[in-house]
Length: 557
Image 1 (cartoon, rainbow, N blue to C red):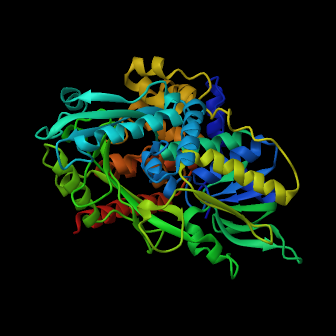
Image 2: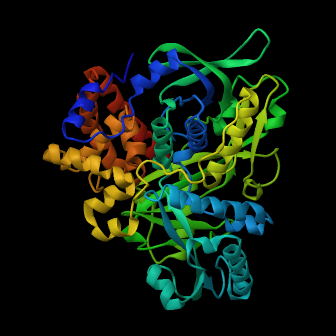
Image 3: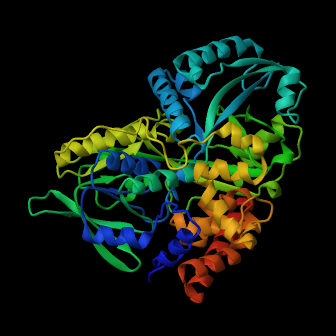
């Protein structure tokens, strides 16, 4: 059944307003998958796959990307949302990864400037029972100097030593009994799902054929055993996508992929590591930066990061052997994080305060044994004898470089060459965006600017053409109905979950309110896409049932 009819009538309405926002129409891309021949087919629409598609398209290759669910629906919407070098990697002795990550951080700060913002990190110094006490503060500050010299300086500000009063000004709920002062350094944050979506849209803008809700089911090979493309499923039918090279960018899902040939499994050594975050009302914390807190009895530090009117508390780092399509934050994990927060903060937090949660798996490349926390976040690229290319591992911050090396590998298979352009390539909405000027305006303009950059004017055009679309869609969040309309017309959103979970992050930031908004989102989808009553009702039912189950697991009911 086709969930995504052509949006040409809506595109014509947009053109009537005197603007031509970039169209990202799934039906047109599916038609290209069926009719065109490609140099490279990428399977997996997470951040690595999307960046690889952008890299290949900028080199002039004919490239296609398919994603079985929605862009960033897996690991790439469930990260810590930090763009950073990683202090822990210095502690592991992996200074090279830190130096390179900090360089890539600044490239993202430039090329996706509307999405990637500076993020201060605060380490409180305590007399005892802290992340570290005053005896280790000097040694830790030496670590921060190393971080600054390795590339932290590129942010334009070095780490700072804070007084007790300054620490409390950044987080007034922090317990001050043993508090001496603190150290602050600077990294960045990003809405990981919107970054991935923006990469996919930008790749399409440069000529890539891209489709979500399109599942790769079989790699096709010639009579000589060489890769010739893949069979994909979309809307109840199969499409044979022809490509000279195929890249598997499915992350942890490569663990369960049936296309791995006998003898190749040991080379990949994919080890999923589960991480969870919970959202709690910001008024319970009142932090204006990321605060690092100790967790009693555990070596791992927890962090609390403000995001709008909630604060994200995370994360865990444990081996995961279960169903990769059914990963949830459990009551035990929630209690673990809340225990850490209660031990460090003067606030009464209970399970009922969690307004949302996310759980995902990091694609670690490592054999069994040892703690996942201690495994280096390196990546691995492999070219099989039949020409199939796999990329796994790494982290969000280095995704651009991972993509560059992946397309370098693909060039060897297709025997074509092109120069990487992504080091300085702006994403859609970034060129000409002035973050300081937009933020200073406040209100809706600042909200739209941080989500769409210079493309925010297209959402404003919808608001101007239909003032009724300014109505908020999710109680307590700043998103309007106009953003739902834009998501359908220009961001390839085709389901209630696409809109609420990833285009708006409402499922994380306001779980219960998002469930109440599901029916209204469904009606907008029906109007924009011409969906049947039955399909809309099923989407709404699936979303609300998923939210209810997620909440039940989280609260241990």
